[in-house]
Length: 444
Image (cartoon, rainbow, N blue to C red):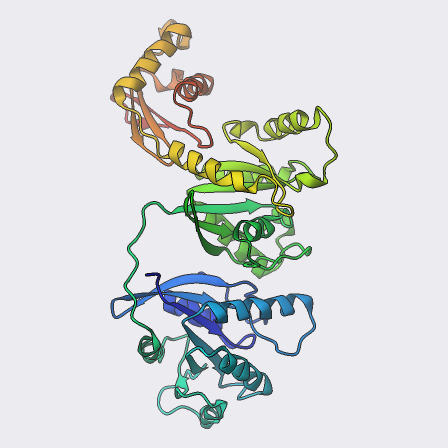
């Protein structure tokens, strides 16, 4: 059975993300004293009394707004409510009970789900302030729980109440077959639209305004090809344009999303081609040793002729010359063109990233490579490569033992890498090579 789902809802700036971070034990959601920071549904996991639960942090609900982003945030919160087994309704004791709280309470009662009201920012020790008792008038079966999301007081009582509302679930075993896929790229390249097309669901807020996605958002998806966790990331801007603190946090989150991914989908806008910023974003995934697939999005908007595909492909690999190993696919997140082909490529890249070669096979390739192209020499001393072995995967990592590490030039390392790729493939994954000189320690 899947883990139970707990949605955290409430109006803007009542401390939902602070509570989410406290319960998950991670700074997953961006916390800032500005309404509207959390826009999409953010997923995390917590465990209480041996039971694992999935938490959803939602954007603040403004029941009366006409602002297009806030309207979409409200729709996202409604989807979370519909998905949840139990709802945590967060209010703010400092601002007291307001009309928006009553409107949200009515919305939650219509859901028919168990609702646990909690009154946040009760940070003082002892009896709660008098304003706390106003929240009894929300009219839920459960009594309001006084808590401080900042300090953690009351969170145990809250989780106890959540447990009491849950149906019986068995914890889902960890699945080693799950592939984490980070969707990366410039703002407005179509990352969220791509995930929405994959899910056939308005899972993420999609807008033509750059910077709509500010957090890295996890979405579980399963089909006949396998099990996937898609991580939608905030678009990475030029560093000089990262002005406010929220934007800086988003860049950090996007880089962290790459770190925990198995495969990265680099979404490039076909109308703009590969820009300098695309190169930098691709470099983040490359340096992290992640598998990568280049997705040229909005291909439906490009006028086609007999040469346009080849020319665009050549241009992409010229701009991204350091990752010519990455497969390229032309897609349209809007129409769904070739989106279904992504899963086969993701699986193939993950398999290549995890590929392990025996030492015997590696040294057969090495011997043939050295025979065909002699290693470099300097002042009568020639590089001798004694043997090669694989020490890791994701990325495939090889250690080569030699007599003179200073003679093992980068160009010859690239030659050996190309020989490995021509023999074993390694499509979509970088290769890491470590050069060791016998007797002198490691030299990379």
